[in-house]
Image (tube, rainbow, N blue to C red):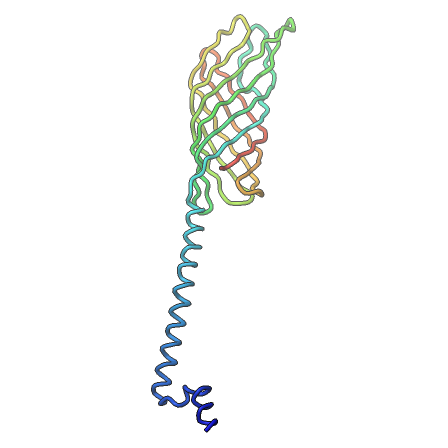
Length: 216
């Protein structure tokens, strides 16, 4: 009497008809596959969505440039010899991410100081100010080439008696090479051509230096 009971408990499936057992196993297999697909597909889709959103998202960007300046085609007034100098820029913008590309519309302020002295040795430095808007276009993820340009309004101020302060259309065009190792942070070097159409004297200069950008 013990053997039939044990057989019913431990091998109950074997007592079922063959077709019934086959159908039951098929149903269980299909249910298992469906459960796996239901779990796996949302996870995969979510992962892809996250990567897509990360790639396409916009983020606030803050940039700071520290640079030297070399005058080009600057006038000599009363023997006043303009020398090189230096300055800085502060930039704010919205960095837009696309596959392999960063596009950043931005606004900023730039200041450059050019040293000068006349024949008598009197120093009359030129201070060059700019407020500007423009954009940067960067390619890649690790070592990143960048091209950029801005336009805006600039003005020059100097203590030289024969050169009145004046302002006008300002512009720059430059290139950079950035290094992105730390997330949301980049450093790089740049060179650019700058100018201010402040008549009758229109300063133009090359700026070169280092910069850093933080993305929030």
